[in-house]
Image (cartoon, rainbow, N blue to C red; front, top):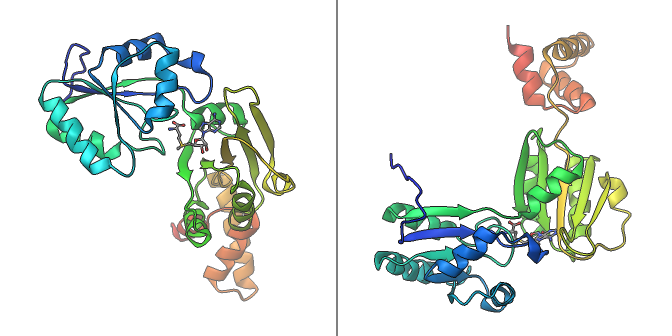
Amino acid sequence: MKEQKVSAKNKAALFLVATPIGNLSEFSPRAVSVLKEVDVLACEDTRNTLKLLSHFDIHTRMITYHNFNEESSTKGIMNLLEEGKSVALVSDAGYPLISDPGYELVSEVIKGGYDIITVSGPNAALNALVASGLKTSHYLFFGFLNSRQSQARKELEELKEFPYTLIFYEAPHRILKTLKLCHEVLGDRKAVIARELTKLHEEYIRGTLSELLKLEEVKGEIVLLIEGREEVKTKTDLEELKKEVDALVKKGYKTKEAISEVAAAHGISKNHLYDHYHKK
Ligand code: SAM
């Protein structure tokens, strides 16, 4: 076990700084001062980050850290920490590491025994979730589905039984295909498209997957949220369903088939009903 007591005084530390997802005024004073004070700023794309730095009059030295140089750049940043330097990692928007690079770096920094300090800020998934109208008590953030349809289908099959709100990131040119696939695999559920969050054309389109499929085009940056599988039934409900299974068994169904039928009819997981049915 390793314990990390966070202290901003520690020089050799990695700061993970969330950046705006659109509206620059969401960048906090703390984030600005951290970016001004660190020795080096690691970013995905210097041109994008330069816009942020210019707006806030920040002149910190930048280096790149992106998917294509993760390994070499991680080594470089570890060397800087060894020299006692502080480094901040930012991505183009929102939190680094959330559908963005940085995981490998954080793992190495922890192994190296250096501090990691987060500086809070916006995140597209959470902004979208809280305004979606879908359940927020439990949710599953998936990020981008695989760009290959066959792989994306497999991923959705795995998510099908989750009773939690599902959150996806998606590109505008793929959203209609993704909606179609989600409808095929998950069935017709409530869904929300949250687009251009914190920007001028921020919009929420709430409906069911079949309704959203009627859209001809969705532009801009998009978060897609889909309601989870209907909450698993309460014990009393399950007792009722058990009786329905028994009735089918009396009609000549095999128990397993009867359980599948009843589970499908009520939109619940057959494994859940199976477990309950065989529990004495
Ligand atoms: N790291 C970011 C975060 O914490 O939200 C996500 C980066 S990921 C590479 C980019 C995706 O996030 C976009 O394709 C879109 O799905 C979502 N996204 C980012 N900004 C958004 C915004 N303003 N409105 C809606 N979705 C956004």
